[in-house]
Image 1 (spheres, rainbow, N blue to C red):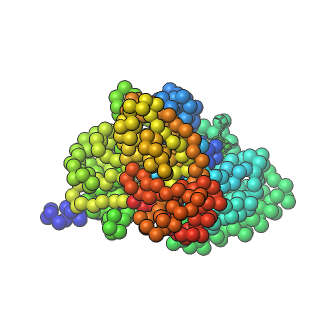
Image 2: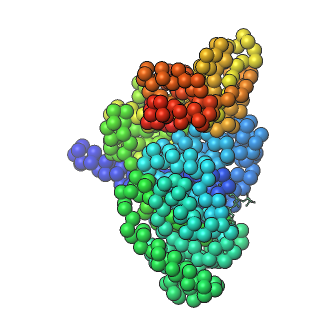
Image 3: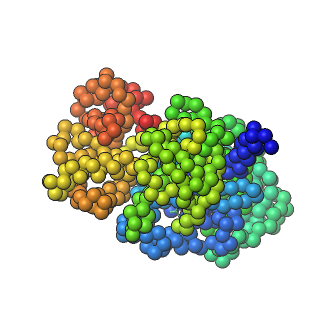
Length: 538
Ligand code: G4P
């Protein structure tokens, strides 16, 4: 075969493999059922045969993923991993994000590596705070969002109320894709609004196995359902109102995250999961092309490239272990591939790449766009590092997220000022914390900023164990912050205001800190809200 034919064949293979991938992350508020749903997706996706192990793992965090003392102390997961399953020839990569309420920048960054977001909402609570924050990142990235309304077996909002709650809280247009038959204790199945079939379901003990399901046409199913005539009539009306909405959905609006198909169900009882998973693979986006730092699209079948979206230190407390998670953006990855790190030009051989299924590590032989590989102890890799094999490229896709919690930090030992700076600078480079000069500060203190409050414990712990520096932290009264451009006029205006404080992070990015919500609105008036960034692309 001529060389050009081989090349075309290789490119075709990459495109075909990429098309089969669905890389997604779940956005939800703690307790909405993310862990339960994850497990049930694995059950319905055929990756596990009996549910129980992942929730077990969550409950047994102490034993299962004991890579970090903080995680042990609090019994929660601080890190993310990747879960893979394959159904109907589609390969799903679920980028697992930590589910604790003290969530971190990692959670937000993971969304940059996902092509689709699965939004899980508790039917009793509607859209909650953390979902809103995560939604903002999806909105910035304009990625498709698919919604699953969970816990329909419990008393909660009525389906139409959930729909308007999503619309009002997030400003996204919800489009019903399935509809619950009976709510709360009467919940007995799901009407598939796309396939126009009624799925009557029966609970399995603890929801460990797939729910027994019988599929009917609407009227035939309603005859078998145990509901009052009044409830049946109401159900018919709701179905009539919503049944054509999916067929009329504006594809482009969906792709850009302006509208979201909404499925109902109960992850615990396995209701609505078959209908959901039938359509999820079709609706979720295959790998997209990422734009490089010059704004040019990197084609999926170009030479191998990827970027680091997550670093995880100390996975194994016996070694100073560190993993870099790389989202593949183009080309084919094969074990042993030599890549170049775009910032330094350094060459790295990817000889022991892994894919993670929960806590287990599997050596990965090959991977395609959309897949995530993790490399252990990759030396100088940082969050955002680009790697490539042949044609050079540099991505700049990880934004700066605005810290929401602030603390002043100094070293308890005054002779360790240098270690303090160096250690914190390193942790900032790893993306663990934002480090700023204290506005009008006295030099031996630094200002720390994080997205989640738990992150301060991570910083304290790592400074102690890795840099032998005990931190003293004290509270500060900053309420919020916004990143700025290097615009002298804007910076001067903000510096002259009493309730705003301008400072810089260790890399020189200017940021303004506010004393109160009122100070934000004042600053918005003064310099324009469009110049105060919640997320900033470097
Ligand atoms: P998270 O990862 O989003 O934090 O939520 P998780 O799956 O851990 O679920 C939180 C709680 O909600 C769990 O109860 C779980 O069993 C329950 N849950 C999840 N899906 C459903 C559902 O469809 N219906 C009902 N009724 N409950 C659901 P828990 O009491 O905290 O834990 P456990 O005692 O069940 O282990």
